[in-house]
Length: 178
Image (tube, rainbow, N blue to C red; front, top):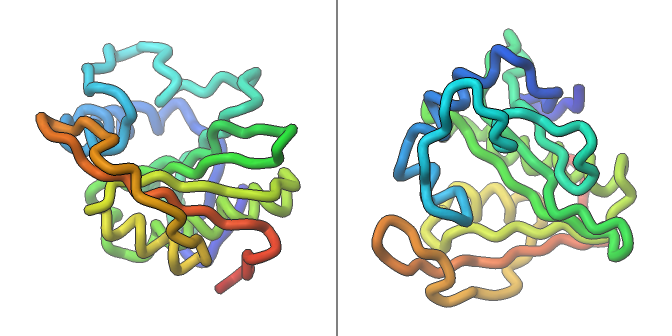
């Protein structure tokens, strides 16, 4: 397990799936804001890649996020779009509603940075988030990510176009435990 100050990132367990399905992916508004595609229901027992991990997929590393105190599942974290040639990847995370506003997001981003830069030897990490996602913007910036641009009206979410913010962090600018 990778450890932060508050959370750990570990492999997905079978008993995580019903919780993630019920609390993250069955929430139409949350899932629509988090996914780059329209929401659709996930059938119980589905092999949907948001839930079931394909250990052969090298460009996508999903984690379950757990509290260090007690091991309670609090969300998901992913390093995705891993490009070994350009040594870059994207960060994504989703916290269960009961775990939001507790500083876990900032810690998850820190642990993903450690994984990307130290374990994987990457040069650049990137985050794309909706411009009104203050929690993700705050978590990224607290970890040293810099706003690199705004993709105007690039995300279709629940009947309207929203702007996305593009943030980046280079390994030489990363300050572990900041």
